[in-house]
Image (cartoon, rainbow, N blue to C red; front, side, top):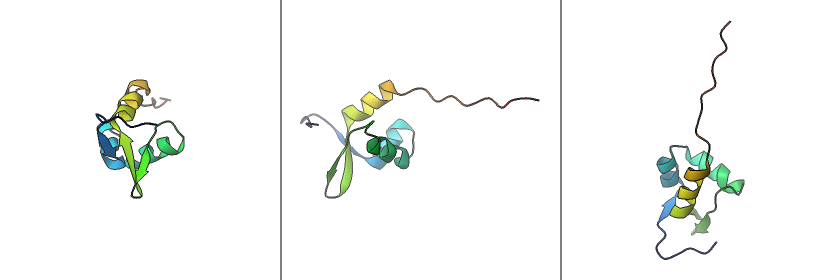
Length: 69
């Protein structure tokens, strides 16, 4: 995954805030290889284009309806 000079880089925590998810969810996506990241000095870094790509591809969150008896 080549990083372009114009790419803005985010920590896992920052990426999570941008996407409205937890940092654990970002790490899970990275482990599942659904989002690419790289390590710099033992810190995971997520390029902005990966955040944008995931935001465009992810399904919107839908709350399940409670069955009424």
